[in-house]
Image 1 (cartoon, rainbow, N blue to C red):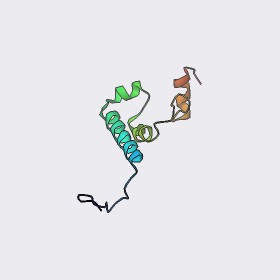
Image 2: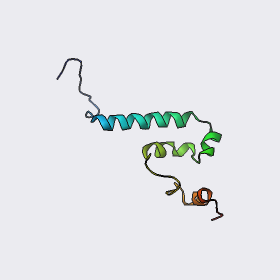
Image 3: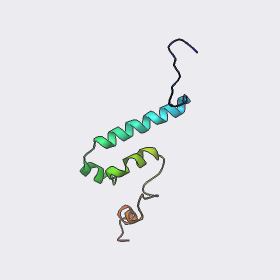
Image 4: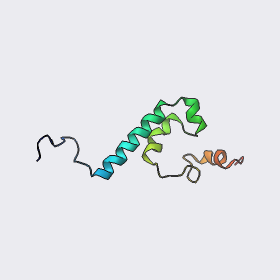
Length: 79
C-alpha cells in the first residue's frame, strides 16, 4: 500500500464516481438543512424529507410526489 494510505476499518474504499456522488449528496443535505422552514416550504420540502431528497436526486418531484396528497399541490388542482 502506498505511503500515507490507510485502510478504513469501517468501510471499503469507494470508486471515485461513488465518492463524488456521496459528496454531492452531503453538500445538498447541508444546504437544505441550512434553509429555514419557510424556505423549505417554498420548494415543497419538509425538514423530514431532506434525507430522502438528497438521496434520490434523480427523481422529479413533479412526476413522483413524495406524498400522494401532494399531487394536488404540484398539479394545481384540488385533487
